[in-house]
Length: 144
Image 1 (cartoon, rainbow, N blue to C red):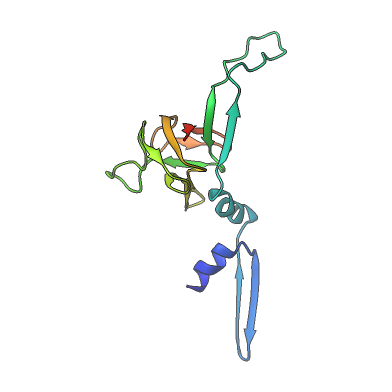
Image 2: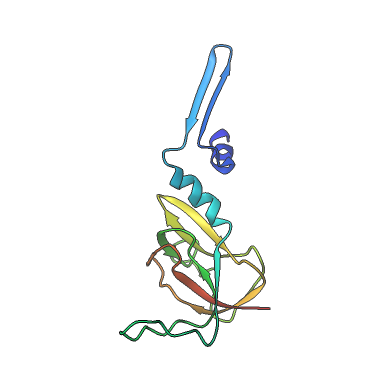
């Protein structure tokens, strides 16, 4: 119970002493703490429908249009809570703010990614167990 509360707190180091009893809790890397904090707030990206062309000699790939839920961390994308289970969301599903839409596993921690607001899932952009990078597009969404 203490370890669970320590992980949730975001504190990197804790020394506790009471008489002869003492305990030290320490997170191995700051990145682990950030991953937990970031999982609660997925990034949203709005791309205007008429994005300005890139100023380069090579033609740029067309920027995707719409609103997206982006990966807040690097890890493995999981569409369902477990193997053989139904995915959290499917195309066309309406989700409420805070509903889990997927899991990103990072450093053996399962980080639930939540819907940032009430929306409809218009497209799932990652395959189950596919690698997800920081800011990778996970879902195309439409607000309600």
